[in-house]
Length: 484
Image 1 (tube, rainbow, N blue to C red):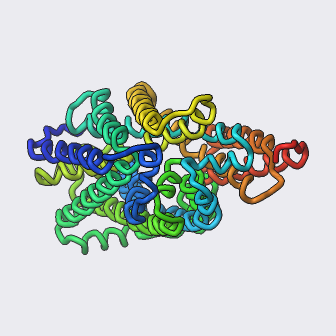
Image 2 (image 1 turned 90 degrees about the vertical axis):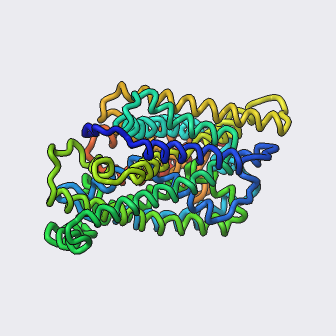
Image 3 (image 1 turned 60 degrees about the vertical axis):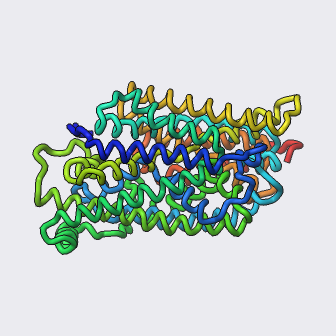
């Protein structure tokens, strides 16, 4: 990241503090009156579909996305080919609604992995839950670190304190407000970063001598409007095939077999509402990415006409550099609050739900009262909050390439879990032994692919899920056991 020698104006600091305070206040207010785990973890199964839509979009949008997607179009040779991925994401969401979502509304589930317990028994459910908990804590902790880098650069606050500042804000409303708090605070975050991005883009266009005309002419002259790449190259992430096929499987994994997303569906008033929220979120994400990419093209145009005093060290940081160098006081604070908003969607409640319902409560020999279960849920949320902050602080000790690799691990593990879901949903011949062996095979193969080849990341989910499914089915057929 380039050094941003910025002393924030008092108004900017006030805007940021007000935003963080509003997040906590909203979370505490909407989360009041909880009596049991169903209230704490599922919001009473009574949240409107449009709130879940906002939460889904905010959950999959991180500060890294907010800053990096404009950098893709800004880069030399950058264009709109990234949009091939959200096209695949939209198809994958529709398949989740058809193939997987009906299983989540059979009975009153708390966790995505309860479906696996019905089909294969507790061991497969527990393995999937542990895999989710480890990778989610690792991935979100490192995303917290990457967000803290921005806080560190623009405020001068040291890195550990920057991690703690963002992390503690999220922990407070997650612990006391539960999933209802998380969903409504996600909606606030969604509106905040959307307004911040729109304002940033509008001011960027206004800074060009001839406004939109300059941007459109620059885009045509530099071939920045290219959207479709029909080539078949497994090492390139932004091709039509990587987008449609890889993106489809990635969405199936992240939105169909990940507790973080499934928990939001279970909060809906009905399966129809959950499906509506998921499909419409795909359209919103596509439009959102298009906006971020257009901002990137605008940045390329601006800095082509007004070169920076020193070259940028990273394309990912061009947007935030423009914000802090060229936007008026107050707007800077709002856009930086938008960066924080994109980072603050919480996975703590989802992790606590998985820990309690998939591991602790089924293995415990005692019965807990509703009040005791609620207290356990809050303690578990706090535990994961501390763990993510610790991972974020430790991230400062890692090389950037290591951080990116670990984030890849957190992403592709959901493909392996998707393969297990396919074993349970698409065939009646799979057994518990096959599911467990398939999981190990999927993890081994995708680890080898990720760290030993140049295959692009959109293909990870299809490789992981296919390997898990095929290996699991072969073992099930070759070595049947008494457990279906």
